[in-house]
Length: 203
Image (cartoon, rainbow, N blue to C red; front, side, top):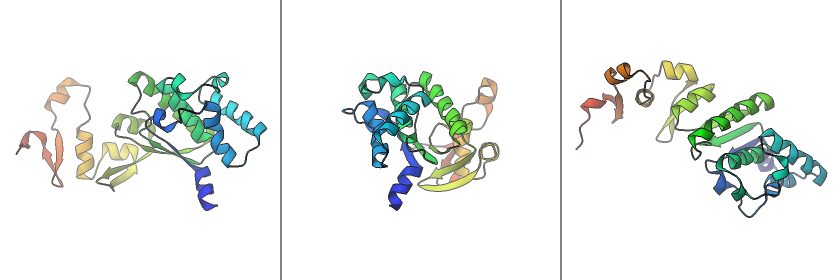
């Protein structure tokens, strides 16, 4: 019973929607699965699935189609709809745009931001793209070798990092101004210390 309650409140969205959606199931069944597990009635399921499709920007008339009949971005929208089906409080997003074309990534990020405002939902967003992290996050945790080495409000961490590993990560972000980019010191994290990149030797 406790596990079922956790499933309702916490849902996961994975990096590759094609591997996380059953290719043998039409979208209706994909979205209905968790609702049936929660004991929803058929009429309520039908209504909820229509709401979910509209919510993520997919035509509700497409519920009988299979995952292979959608684009990568549409499949990720369907994965988001599935995660939202039971009205969770938290979404764990594991690199949700990493497998998508750059032209599609912005649309998914915008959708997630709109849903967060509309549904008052919280995200635990796992990503390596620092620009995306800075854009979407209120607070950020930096992990190294499976441990959190720095945590704080996003702008504070980006503007005033304290941990050497965080400083090295942020120094790897390109600066749009070519003059600054050419002359700035780039740092590398090695053996627990920060080292200017030009001092690194290959053994």
